[in-house]
Length: 329
Image (cartoon, rainbow, N blue to C red):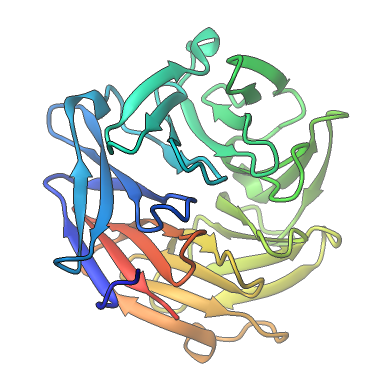
C-alpha cells in the first residue's frame, strides 16, 4: 500500500521538535513526532496513512502522551514487533512507551529513574540487541541501559574529555558507540574494555561537531558536521586521520543528517532552507548541486530528518510547525 502523492505536509498547532519512523512492516507509514507548547508541555503525536483519503493524518494525541520536558530525541524500537511498537524519548529522563494496535500511547516505565539527577541530552537504541540503549547526560557521562531491568550495564565519563554533543550506537555491534564532541573530536568507545580511539575529520580545525550519523549499510563510514554547518564530513573509521569524503555547501547550513537505510552512499541533510539528499562519488570537494539526488526547498529551518527503515522510499522532516513526508526514489 503506497500513497498516490509524493509529498505530504502535516500541519501542527505548535512547533515540532523531532520525528521518527516505525521500523515495522505492519504499519510502514506509522511515525511519531513531538511538539512544544506555550504551557511548557511537550506532546507525542502518532501519525499514519489513510488510504481512503490518500493522506497522512494524526492517529491519536491524548493526554497520556504529554511530557514535562521537550524531548531531545525520540525513536521507535529498531526491530519490528507485530503486536506492540515501543518508543523511547530522552529529555528529563529516558521514558519507555508502548503503542499497541489501538494506536494509543502508554508510558511503561522511566528507564533511568535511578539516574534522574541529570537530564538526558540524547540517546540511541542498539539495533543488534534491542534491550540496550545508550544515553548521554548533562554531566558528560554516557550510560548503557538495559530496558528490561532499568539497570546500568556500563557507564563512561572520565575517558570522554570533551563535551558530548551527539552519540550513536554501532549498527553492527552491541559493544561500540560513537560520540561527537566539542573541539572537533569524534570518539569510538568499546564497552567491553572501556577502550576508545579518536577520529579527526577536520584535521587541525577544532570546531564543535554537532551531530554524528553511522552508516547502517557500511559500518566503516560515519558522517558529521561542525558548528559552521557548511561542510559534511565522511570518515572511514579504519583511517582515523584521513578524510574519506566531504560535501561543501555555499548558500546554506546543515542542521541534521540521516543515512539511507538501503544505500551506503546516500545521505539526507536538513538545512536552514532545504532538504537535500547527497549521493557520494569517489572525488572530494564536489559541490552539492553536482551530486544531489533531490533538493526540496523549505520555508523554515529543518529541525530533524528521519529516513524510513521499513519504507526506504520515504523521508520525514520536522520543519517549523509542520512535518513533511517526501517520496525520494
